[in-house]
Length: 205
Image 1 (tube, rainbow, N blue to C red):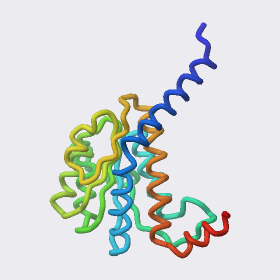
Image 2: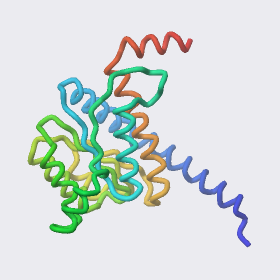
Image 3: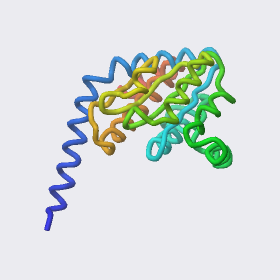
């Protein structure tokens, strides 16, 4: 019988290793993404977010953090972010009539405006519907940020900013994606609200 405690230990150790590698590989790109998102919000633009499976859940999670707030202790205004993974009627209508590859690109066409940002999340970097969405965004003047894994895939090649987690194991890529987009939201909301951020810092000392 397998030692399940050892399995758990090894999983967490590998997750830590991937996150440590992510520190080295993703922080500069993460700060680029922060600056793009801050500028978009300052100019009255919005985020569109997409992904499949666990990355669909991450899309909704990230949109919720921007609309609500990352922490109840930081009371800032709502920020406009739309998860393209939540409207079941739109998703199933487009998938049924035209194929699943268009479920996100069609929504980008509907909602995307120049200066908006599409954040596409994929552990492989090759999700066909995300690739189609990125291409649609580029045609509209919508900037592209991707959170991917492995070598980055086609999505990284097409993106304006690519956060590439250096692992090919889906679970560990997703675990690092979660940390990255939490940091993205944390820094963005504080750069948009510098006086509140300064008070928060002073109160913590």
